[in-house]
Image 1 (cartoon, rainbow, N blue to C red):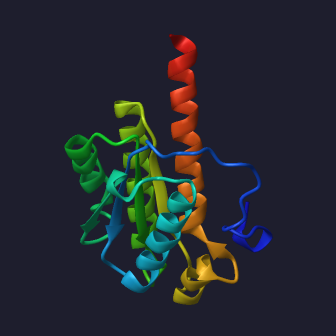
Image 2 (spheres, one colour; image 1 turned 180 degrees about the vertical axis):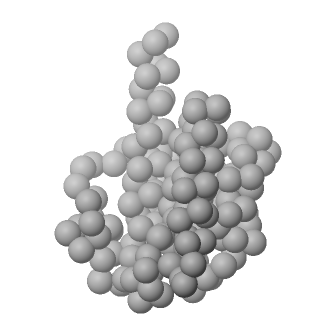
Length: 166
């Protein structure tokens, strides 16, 4: 759904109590004025669901392209329930944005399948810097909230399926 049709910070369902869940978050250092806003909104959302600070592990990657390898390493290092990747790639004069965005999305999906846990794509792919601001706490809400909610729901689903299988 297009951001102009939905506020990214609106949560339409009740979220789980997630006190024991563990999350890894990797943040691109490129466009920190955007990625730090995504991170802050994510952390606030996780805290509202009682995720303990000591169960959230944050690392940084130089850019969006480096997010998948950093996510993989963080997952191996901390044994988390889900990994969130935050970045921002703004369209420019070339097609670099398409190559980076597709590559990162595919790599995160591959990691999800390989490790059997969610590696979430919290990468903004706007046409302009203003569009990025609009999706990082501006008029369209904050993508950090949306990704945190998806992470909470996916970990809850995984834990439910583990218990149901036993």
